[in-house]
Image 1 (cartoon, rainbow, N blue to C red):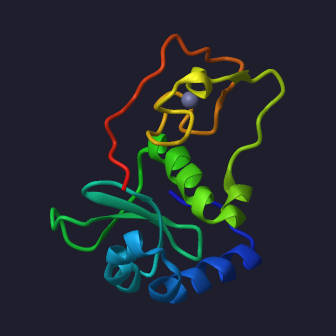
Image 2 (image 1 turned 45 degrees about the vertical axis):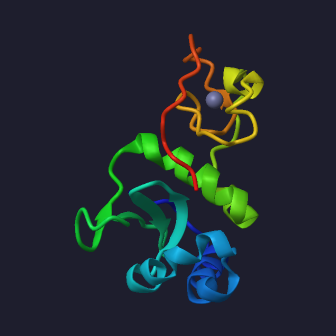
Length: 149
Ligand SMILES: [Zn+2]
């Protein structure tokens, strides 16, 4: 999966990749060797897998537990939004990649959910953007057990 990035954003991502060891907060420093090896900026850091974005907008994932070598493409669309939302929390410049809330969209129930609202757990319904397209009204709030560091 690939998202369209402007040349400015591409330059930004490349700079963050290069600067990762110096810029990343201490709790995310462990990802530095992966960032250097795979030339991708981590968006979502799960327990066993990280999803990153490359300067060309390519979304890749890699195992941080040695489950497989190298990078794999991100093919499941359900990961796209959560990864971008998570990444945009640390890099507000990436928020431009998030979809715009369409007219008629409804607030996702996660906005009122004590665990989901502060962004502790990613919402499985809206992917973390906080709204749902008019066509799909959520019946429930799913709390996937995706670990966040
Ligand atoms: Zn939600």
